Image (cartoon, rainbow, N blue to C red):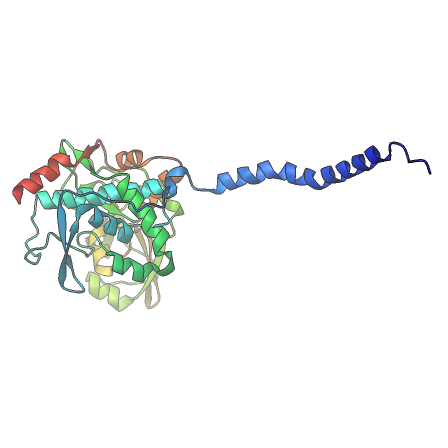
Length: 343
């Protein structure tokens, strides 16, 4: 029998075509698949780039009074900063926002160590772990709070602290009052709009990113009797209560008139424990509904605003310089040297 000529190349051609049909969709999809993955990944600075332990270096220690345990914990300054950032800002925020928070935490404690003025601190303590100063949590606290998420959260926050290590915010060569809060009403306030002191770097600025914050709007219900008692006013008739006499530079309520009595927005916020001093009061029969915009005093850096800026690609320096007018980011060496010389 004669061999069939040239049949093998034909089979090879068929096999090749079948392989091409099978592989072609994968070849088309693969580049877009990789691009999609890259687009969905956080920017490089949002990833912990090494499995090696991140070592934080500190020249001074901080003694923290743990209010619940009534004990004093002494630890290196940068470890303290890590515990403040972990307690004060969500770990899933953008890396650049976490870095900005690290700067505020470090600035706050350096200023306090240089100018110890709080006479109510227990002997041997530099600061408390409570909201009156800045909230601090140690590793044991964080492991208990975060559970299975502890590893990635602590690595991310440690990296944010490391990448700003030894830096603080200064104005005219001095550490600033590094005030911060959760969410604005769309603007921050001048410091004198909420407190008595005016600082040139604590000026009202726009913060439009805050409107995307889950804490932007809040509603609370009170009994009429409770509001009348706490504000020492008489409420009559249903509908909106109070006539706004004056607003602050950041559009928060400065003065409001309720049935002939003028009250400050801050006093009402404190008396009723409101989220913000930008509010609307409504009376409905025996209930008073208070709706607030923003969360916190509104002075300094908005945390959700910082995160919004970071999502737009702004770095921590731009964030800090937006919320604190005319400041510089300065090395702490001169200040820590002064502190170690005092001991």
